[in-house]
Image (spheres, rainbow, N blue to C red):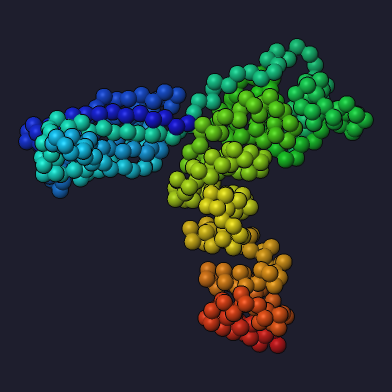
Length: 402
């Protein structure tokens, strides 16, 4: 969820001359709704927050708990008649990991501020917080009262079972309806094996459909339910929960949400993930969860976010930005299906980005197709260092095979 707010405070000549270095002022605390107690305020030091920053105003955004924030401090200074307004501003983003403050120790010097004729200047702080939105406001879905009759069907997950009613499954899901209304093994034996979801996901999804309270309320829980609903076409659940991932995009939840959007072909959500990634990619790339994403989903993310046209454009982008874990998996299909059409692009990328296995594959392919390759203009355009390096590697491999 994204929440925007602002606060202002007045700064005048008395603050510069009477306040001591390190003497702090602060605004009132502002509460952020639906944030589980997040509060924020501004701290400022008219004479600087330490001796090193004497004769500067120091300004900081402060919070009482972990949150990701974008913020901007600015001063709109009206000038003399006939002149336009002058704006002094500084902006930043910061991932607060604990209660702390972050900002600008040298926001503006006293000398700079004194050059403007109007004192009593208004300093404004505009903030934007990204945090997990409330999941507890989910309403029951279909059958809040269903425990009075015996169950007649089982969803088998490993050695555990979720008991449910056939008619209920047929009502909520056309997939289950087709399964149970024909002469199938599932209909005959009263059970179906589910191998692509864990027990907790299956049980939580069914509990949600029945209107039972979710015990573990998290983005991961909601995405698990959405995945289950997508496979079994339980549209009423998808409609009810689809907005939650959008309102809960954060550095931490991004991998879970983008993986779901990619797997379940939710193009609108995926586009929102791309926009979020473009703005926060440095922090996202540093997370362990991001490095555990399937390489194909990361490749699609890079290609869509940065309008990359070819697989080699994606590989170069990944290499340049340190996303190394997708390189080997994406290079394997190139190696296996190398052709005259892809050879020169593969060579250019392999030597530019020092990809050893792909270099060897290119050298071996050249050995078996040298006559046709030498007739390609794109081969001649590669440049002498690359072509010489590739031919030398081919010769070295030839000697090694003898």
